[in-house]
Length: 360
Image (cartoon, rainbow, N blue to C red):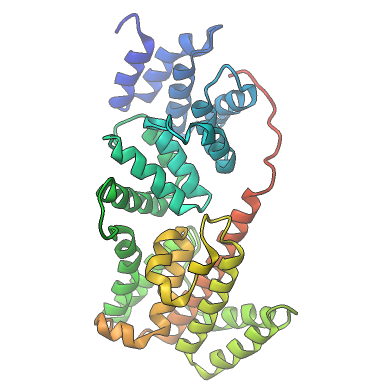
C-alpha cells in the first residue's frame, strides 16, 4: 500500500480521514498523466470537507476536458456541477449494458435529480439485479450525499429498497416509497393534540419546502393572494375564481380537489420531461402515479388527496380535524412547491452555461 497512494487514500477515506487522503492523492492527481481515480477521490474528499470551490474546480476541469476522462467520471462531474441532464447524456451510451457499479448509482441519482423517477428505479433495479449493493461506506456515497438534500436522500433509499425487492422477481411491485410518502400525512391526521399536529405539519413543510419556515399565521391571506393571481390570468381564471369561492366558504376539501385537478393537468404537460405517459396521470390512478413523481409533487398530491377525500381518511382511521390556518399553510406550501419543482425541471432542459477550463 506504500507504493499505491490511491489504495492508501481509500483506506483513509474509509476511516473518514479526508484531509489525509487528499495529501496521499496529490502526487497522483497532479501528475502529468492525471490519474482519473485519484482526481475523483480528491474531489469527493473536498466535498466531505465542504471545500466546495476546490471540488468544483476539479469537476469543472474533468467535464471541460472530455477525453482522456471516462464518461462515468465526467457524468459524476456534471451531476455535482448541477447538470444532471448532462450526466445522463454522458452515461446514455453505457445504458445498454456497461452501466454498472458506481456509474449505475450516478445514473440513478442523476435521473432522480431530473425528476425521472421511473428511470431512477430502472437504473437501481439493474444495479441490484447484478448482485451489487449500495454500500454507504463507499466513497461514491460522498457524491450522493452532496447531490441530494436529506429528505431526497431518504427518498432515494426507499426507491432503492423497491428496486432491490423487485429485481428479477415477478409479482406486485414493492411499495416502500408509497408508504414512506404517505406516512407524514397519516401522522398529521392521527395526531391527537394541536401541538402534535403543528409539529407534524412543520415536518411536512420541511420536505415540501426545505429551508422555508412554517408559519400558519396569515396563511389564508397568502393562499388568497396566490388564487387571486390565478383569477387574474387568462389561462386559469376560471380555476382562480372558483377556488376563491371555496376558500371564502372554508370548503377545504373542494379547494384541495380543485388544486389537485389543476396540478394533474399541468403534470400532463410535463409528462415527457418526467419520463411518464400522459394518459397515466389521473386522479383515479394516484397509487400508481405518486411513486413515479419527484418527491415534492408526490407528497403535495398525497396531502391534497388526504384533505380532499374524507371517506378515505376515515378508512385509514385518519380522524383528526386539522386547524384551518394549518390547512391553509399546508395547501399554500404544497401549491407553491409543485410549481417550483416543475420550473426547476423545465430549466434543466435549457443548455448548461459554458465552463471555463482550469487545471486543478
